[in-house]
Length: 587
Image 1 (tube, one colour):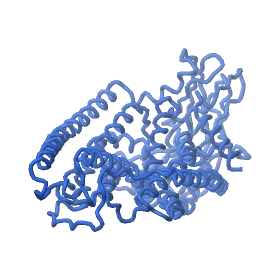
Image 2: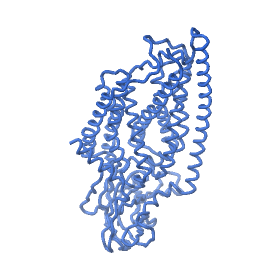
Image 3: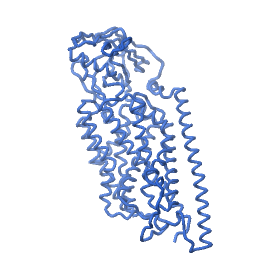
C-alpha cells in the first residue's frame, strides 16, 4: 500500500511540470470557464474568504471546482462565477441579477469596503483581480463623514488569438456606484460588460505578462546592483577572514612542527594542547544526530525546490505548485533524514537508535504540526479559506503514515547497518581537560550573534522581495538571483562557523560540537528578527488571524533554516577540525 501511494506521489510531482494547466481551444459561443476564487482584505494575504461569503449574486446552484492538494493548501476555493463570458461574444451592460440588500448585507459590504477587500477570479486559468468598492475621504476630516461605495459594474476586456484566450483584464466602472454609507435597505443591479479583441501574442507566452512586473529592466537593474553590492561586501569580508585564518594556521603548523623537533617535553599550548579532547563525543548526541539528519533533509528539499524553480515549474499563478512540491519532496526525502541521523548516531557510539529515529521524525514535524493545529483552529474560527477541509488533513496524514514514516524507518535501518566508524585523527583521553576561564564574548550567545550577522547581511536585501511575494501581492520570478544568494549564504555560513571554531579551539575550549551547530543556525534567528521589522515597518498587516499566521508560519520556516544552516555549519566545522588535527602529529 505504501509503495502504491509513493508511486502516486511521484506521478503527481511529475505532473507539476506542465506548460499550462489549461490548453483549451474554443469556438465562437463556447462557454469559457470562469471561477470566482476568494475575497479578503488587501493587506492581509492569509485572511481570505469564499467569494459567496459576501452577499453577491449567486448563479443558482454554486458548483465547487475540484482542486489539487497544493491549491487547497494555498487557500484556493474555486466556485462557478455569476458572470458568463462566452468565447467571442461581446456583451454590453448585461444584468447578472437585481438584488435588494438588507441592512445586515449593506453593513457586511461596507465592512468589506472599509478593509480594502479585493476579489480574485480565474478565467481559463488566467487570474483576475479587482476591488469591491471605495471609500470617499476627499475633503472630509472626520471619519464619520466618509462615504462608502460598492462597485456594481465590471468591465471585462478579453484578448484572444485564433481559438485561444490569451489575456483578460477586469476593471470596475467608477461611475456605477452603490451608496452603502447608511444602514438601510438598498436595491442593487449587478452588471457586467464584455469586449473581445484580437492579439498576436502566442498562447505559450500568455503567462509572461505576470512575471514582467518583477523583471522590468529598471527593477532588475536595481535588484542586481543591490545583490552584487551586498555579495561583494560579504565575499570581501569572508576573503579577508580566510586570508588571516590561513596565515595563522600556517604559522601554527610551522610552530608545532618546530616544537616537535626541538623539545618533546615542552608544554603544548593552543589548539594542539586539546587534541585528546577535541573528538570527545558531545552531550545530547542523540539530539545532535537528529538535528543534523533533519537539517540534511531540509537542505535536500531546498535543493530540489530550486531545481524545479530554475526549470520553470513555479511560473506565476501555477496554483498550488509550490505547496504540492513541498509536501511531495518532503515525504520522499524523509529516508535521507533517517539514514543521516542514525548513521551519525551510531558513529557517536549511540545504542538506542530507535529512540533517535523517533526524535528525528518529530524534530521538525512536531513543532510544525502543533503550529498548524493552532493556526487551523484560528482559521476555522474566522471561517477563512486557510482552514483546511477534513479530507485534505486525512490525505496529508496518509502521506505521512504511508510514505514519510516508512521511508524514515528504512533510512534508519540502512544507517544502522552502514557500520561506519567515526574518523578521528587523534585518540581521545579518558578524562576531559578543564576548559580555562574565557571572556564573556567567547560565550555561546555572543558567538551566535557574530556568526549569524554576516550570512544574514548577504541575504537581507533579497528577503524583502521574498516577503513581499509570500506575504503580499508581488510576483517573484527571478529564481536565478535567489539561487546565487542561497549559494553565497551556504559558503558564508560554513566559513564563519569554521573561523569561530578555530578561535574557540585556539582558546583551548574543546566543546565545539554544539557550538558549531548553533553558530551555523543562528542566521535563522536573525531572519525571525527581520520578520518583526517587516511586520511593523514594511507591511500593513493587522488583525489576530493575520498576525498569528505570519509569526506562526515564519517561526516554522526560520526553525527550518536554523536546522539546515546549523547542519551546514557543523559539517564545515567537522571537516576543518579533522583536517587540522590530521596535519599534526597527535600522540
